[in-house]
Length: 364
Image (tube, rainbow, N blue to C red; front, top):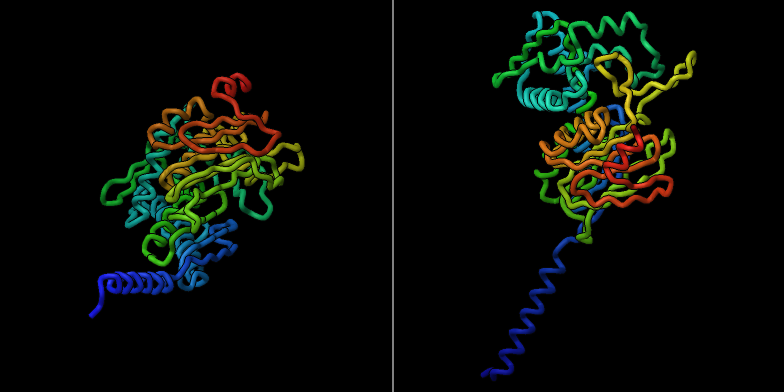
């Protein structure tokens, strides 16, 4: 017969053995990082979890390239190219389905919400102008004044306000010059697609995804600490870090700047960059050199970073509130203004963090 003390000792040993078996069988998260190229940009993916992380990363890139085959105007048989041809052939009428319908609807809404200074600042329907400049080509050049004027026909500055899409996906464009281009939204859409992929995989506990200037952090780091996301110093070719954002998982961060895609005209020596003003047909004129958006949606963060870059911090406040987004603005005089609830640490000593009032005063 077992005495009471022996019973307690036996139960303790059984519990301890069970704990060892359970914890010993748990697989600790591993990590895998890889750099690739997709959607016309460098991709950096870091995964934490179990299983074949290398294969999981390949599947993520496969999804991104599949998306590119859907939304790129450069690919002749992409869904977006087919819509553009349909608009041209059917007097401004076309049909979108599935995710494409939702993406077009969201992009049009962001563009309308960002109406400022007589223009929709991040219009997905101004492909006639953006494709004319083609900043991603091997040898970009300033288009002729006449070709720019042709692209601006039909009041291109407010084109998204004249373009609708209904619940059935029927697109109606008043301007026959309407051409869709997701250049201001594509990388953000890519991070949204990756989020859906990650959420379907129970083996992945955390991830940091970078598609060019659009970043998504998912889940948790193995140590349970916040994710730290570096923001690039907006100096052409510097590659230095301006500062870092500390954030929980499920956060989207996008940056737009005049240092990303640009060229210098050999004749005039003037610099042109890819964020275009549909009112003038040329690069937008602004005191801002970079704008970073932090929010809970990839397409929103990407679109808003371009919109707020063009609008500036003061005119962006209502837009940021509507989309529950935070922002970091950097001007050409090395001032940094942080708007909203974001944990940002400035590390580049050549820059100074200032209030909105100081920021605006410096750029009067």
